[in-house]
Image (tube, rainbow, N blue to C red):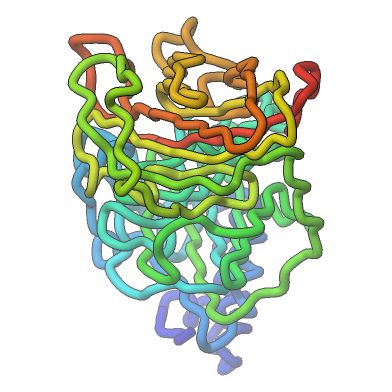
Length: 418
């Protein structure tokens, strides 16, 4: 960091101290003169000990560009105002809506610090490892007065092919001591594909992600409104991570899925066995450790820009005929076939609210509990998964959010699973 601001140097009679000490004096003087909030002052004092490879990015028009609307991130171009207020030397950016993109630098791993003052209950936060408008990793807050107890105050979702997977990763959210109307400090540590999020200088992370799920390993940085931002600091290199136990996988997961290319779904999901792709159309598809198959990652908006049906197939071997129970999670619609017969049709929209399946219109193994009869030997399970945001003509369009399915099987319908 280079000390070039003559105003602050003159206030300490041009003391010739190393850069870190000058930065600390700046902040102390700013606090005394402007009466800035304790959160912001503590953050800035912390910044005084930065290494030479670290960067502080001012909130001004030189460093930030307004981005066009990108589906889930709003219907208008980013709208921001910049100011030198609250005694913050590097300024503030009030991002009323949309996205602002940092005009320089890339981030792969390290530590990101920033201050955020939410402007309502919205998904406001930072997108890193960003590539264009379609891919990146998104960490955000949903500020409300009940944040210390609510389970959705800090969240993570990958953005792949323009789809923000908020609804298919309910496990990546947590309560946090978020101030709904004032400044909050976020620290994001990324080591390889592992991430931890800390709030307001706590020693323990409020959110740990064992494996980031975006398509990029490095990229730019952007901020999403509505919120006020300040004190963005990016440190490069592997950070110190807090030890955390890996989550346990649910029993009975189906993980041997094959996928076929999406087909058009011009009407609400009414597919029949005749629509199931032929044998030669199926190929293996990535399955996450939790059992989730993220269709949007493989067949996202770039590949399936219209209302579509994704196809998944798995084989279950049974040593004898038996009754079993299929726990299925899906976003947004599904038709389930077992050995060529339709056994379930379901819709899991976010709107209208009364039509949401538990948990809250998001994916989960309790979206559907389906009794199925298995024969001895091979049993074929086929899922037709729709990406229609509402499935309610005439307001039909592909979802800007996650498109996925998961399933597990057991012999006891009372087993809640994960």
